[in-house]
Amino acid sequence: MELHLIRHGQTNWNEERRAQGQSESVLTDLGMQQAKELGTRLRHVPFDALFCSSSLRTRQTAAYAFPSWKKPITFLDSLREIRMGDWEGKLYDELKSEFPESYQHFWHEPQKFNVLGGETFFQLQNRALEAIRDIYRHHPGQLVALISHGALIKTVLAHIEGQHMAELWAPPKMLNCAHSIICVHAENDFQILQYADQPYDSLTSSRQNLPES
Image 1 (cartoon, rainbow, N blue to C red):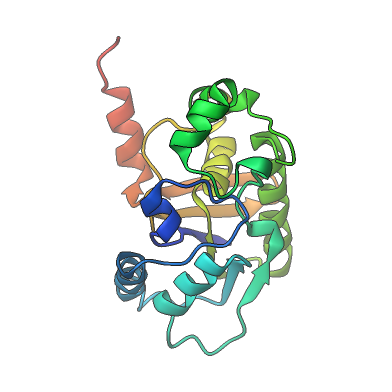
Image 2: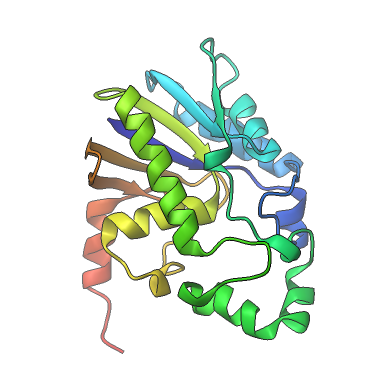
């Protein structure tokens, strides 16, 4: 199965630098335009199925990116963003002041992130991988699009790369409407073809050529 992983377009909470998690935000005008432009780039890709997080921002992205889609879209709670508990809806500047240790963990030591009412990145990763394995079971050999969230997609790619969770936020960034592609050969056999709009071969080459610190 060839699986295209797409992050949603810019939201009002992205613009405000507010923690979203599983709370609802909406696409900005820029986010709508990003989704439309993505759809234009993908208009000739003959997808067999379209899966989408049940969050409003991803549903909006799907509508703008695939306006001519005729088949049912499958909306899944399992594709929603990391649950952030008491953080959701708060500005990141507020969180940095109120919860300095957890803020440090989220952005710099994600393997330690754990807040009241939230998920860890490990739990998010397990949820995301199980959702993808289930999609694979029902769509082997097919071309599938999946619209989800930045952290969720990052955890999937980190798993495939064999990265420790501490390296979750390593470049490249998962920008709004970033487009990644993986090939699922079996339930536990994944290959990255494209990472956040960059061909994976060129990305790995550029990493190998980085000067030593």
